[in-house]
Length: 89
Image (cartoon, rainbow, N blue to C red):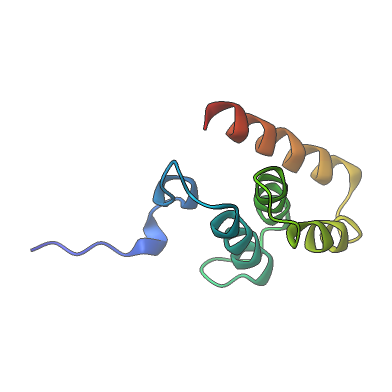
């Protein structure tokens, strides 16, 4: 039987549609820490935005901390991506 590495699947496809706010928060942590791939602050910020919108208040502190390390353009990109994700899911 063929075996597939989970890291080969984009995170947005690996999460069920009805994922909890905590699952999105964990995705943000994964991208911020570079657990499964190189650190990606824009992706981390995106997932923290989604988590916060879904009701995870813990995401706000991480989102603010990351924003201090990011350019305005990066923060804006993460916000656009989060909005796009939220309108589709």
